[in-house]
Length: 361
Image (cartoon, rainbow, N blue to C red; front, side, top):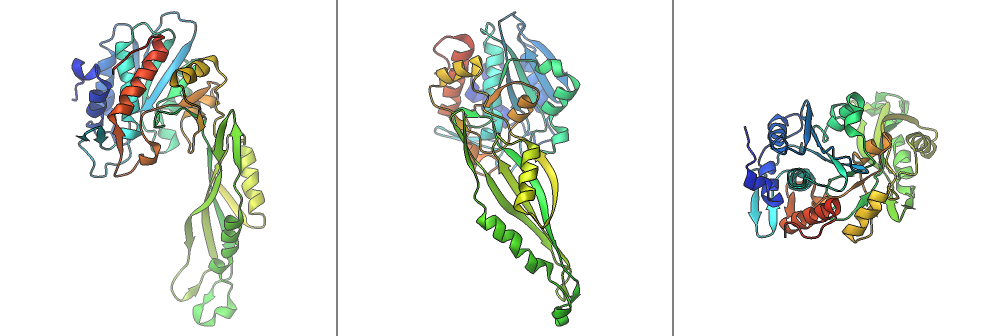
């Protein structure tokens, strides 16, 4: 069993490396959850609960508000990038950016800040990188909603030290064409469904995605073909072809509105929507969010991509994304994080939680 020593827990950089070196591909989070649980149980100011491989630690100091600091423990599959390595100011390894550096900051705060000015729920959960039904945050929201009760939440996803408000919605749909099957030597007897699919691609090429500004955050939509299925054999005219379309939509559109829009775009074609995940509005008007923005000292931007802030929004908790990692490196073989970003992120979070200056240097 991995053990997080006191000297490691006292340094968010060392803690990041220790967490990265505990392999925790989705579904294999037991060891890292055990280590996190053991660590938070050493802090007398925390009440600790666990469900599966999700660990929840909270203060109960009677403060005037409560914030959730959340991070997922799992990673995508390792790409020959474990164990971690450090080269100057750069730490390389699976999960360094997405999002064990953010988890390390939350865990460091949980241990080191015994008198926050807000009550805090530290939420470390499993299975974020896989199917929605396995997501630990989703399952706790369904089974133990009181564990997540709060006025505000910060998800420590990689944002490269900027506040990213809300998130885009995401939709997947198959758009299909039909034809008539025939022998390819007598193709005039058939109708080629793959050829007919060019109309779908033409609509995608001509599509003008929206750019939407909400609370000062810009969201850029996108609608793209991501997969094509068609063909029977090299001597058969195919009678069916379908193209999978991924639509990323701004959070001012509901899931139902996004469904109606994709049907409008592909009017005349068969459209089968297979997944819809609504986005989340920035939520930056909450007093705690405004205070946090003041400490960060940089303007917020919109989140390109879907994150679990949408789950918080669904249960009525305004939330934002803030973490030290670079989102452009998430899931890549080259995943890495700057040590200076971990330290500055830890300082910012501590200053906000305590109202004090200074930190880890």
